[in-house]
Length: 82
Image 1: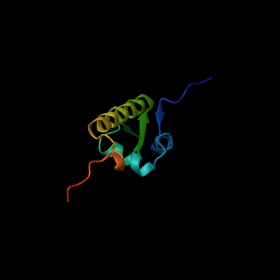
Image 2: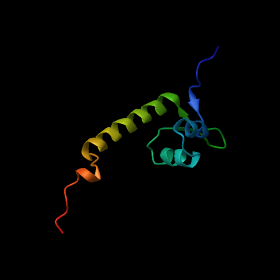
Image 3: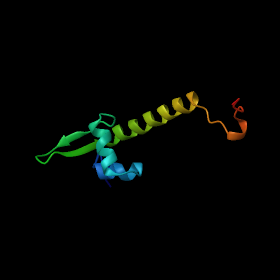
């Protein structure tokens, strides 16, 4: 029985990330998500390992953002001296 596919279409990636194909295409075109262009019609494919690496990078970037921008409840915020 074959394992998971090595390469995914942009639509497949969009489904995994629960986003649109247009958003995935933008990630690829900006170079944030490595992909290859194949065939005469230039169809994009993302290697499964590259998608997993991208997801891990997003977790890492999110952790850094959260650490640098802690969430403050409105009740915990200092009163403004207006």
